[in-house]
Image 1: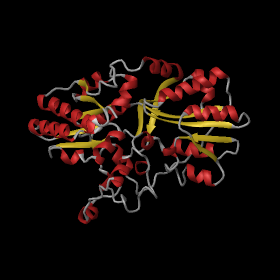
Image 2: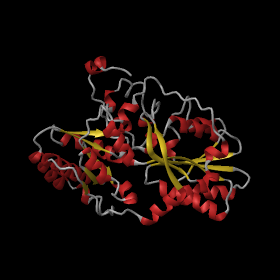
Image 3: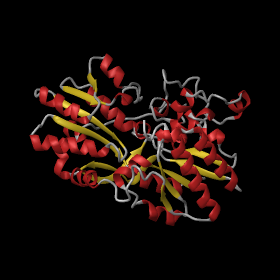
Image 4: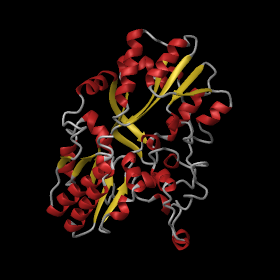
Length: 374
């Protein structure tokens, strides 16, 4: 329980809150990058305990939520093929594509399986040499190394009936895109600790300097979040904009050399579309030329995908920090976890799911009547 109970201590939380209250003198808007941090904030009511001058904006840090609709529809097309065993983590099965999801494909006879590791999918490929096994590889820098290692292992073992449908995204280019948006209100970032445990912090100082925003690497327990907020507010009050590591128990400035080496070997940087946001240059990975034979998009020639987001879904605005989930007209009414319009209501790290799960349903009738609908 070390680093869990210790970082949920209410007395220490009160001290950190007192420190934040004592130093803040003007309004500040901070963005937590990771959806896991969003859930901690909403679950423990941290945003409601902070001074009213400190606003927490929820960022696009949910890997399920930012997987583009086009890739979801490609996954549905591949999973529907009779020769394919389609493997995925469970949180992708209910993410809506255009008109259906992977659960629907499975109910229609598709061989869709939930696995707990990409290596599980590789083992299934070994056990079923007459079938094509595809693993749905999504996520940020945290899940990319094990997916890269699995493809590397498949090549080393000569397993030719395995492939990866890739939709990996990178955080620093997303921060850059957020800061370049004309509607951006973000003045400081709580960076995702698990991402930095892999990649280190070397990409952040240039962003902090160019956009003059503090970036504080933060963990996921309540005290982690509060300490990240405290350090960010202190920098803003002092007119500073540097990178700080408030998660040293997991993050080294140079990251994880073994994971970085695997990423460099298997993947190459590419432009990537983010669901609800659009294409961000150099914000993703794809399999390098050396491993292109293991790319499911190439193997199955998935083309002609015509995507269409539900007109009532405003998850793109939520992902960009322009809208809080309960400010959406559809939230909790026509959009629920049982009948989601968008991925932000499905994912275990989605902001809409957090607001629904922890009963942040407090939007007045008047607010609903005056709220614009996209």
